[in-house]
Length: 201
Image (tube, rainbow, N blue to C red; front, side, top):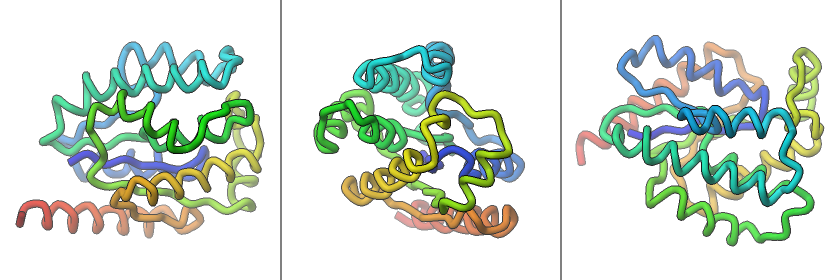
């Protein structure tokens, strides 16, 4: 089962993945960008702000995604794979770039080549409000993408919601302002419920 955890920076998805590691010790844990050796190099370029062209940025995300699908997701598709971010983030961030003159449908189509037909069985989308994201960003050192500001990140979040609906992905929205323990239990229960339904098919 391929499960992705989505949300803008500081939404808490990585914290929840780390908690799930204790429950699912055999799970394959990965992330985008940076889930492969090639992806690590791409991630460094993206987060340091060295890439100036929005189109170049999108293609780097696509390269990372194609590597991840080939090396990690497909070979383990019958196991439990938990991914910190996915193509949903890639599309949302690409669409939010002011100078990228491509429609959402066009960006989704380009991403389909990198995905090679592989879509997540379940998406947990962490939703954060402006007050919460402001407080959390103020407590950490910002990377190049986070430095684009709160309004930009909220715009990305809106696109994430639109993408999951447009692609009809099985999506569970998580209130990121809820307690860590409450979120953990909700996610665990959803995974177990989904897994049980799959077993009955």
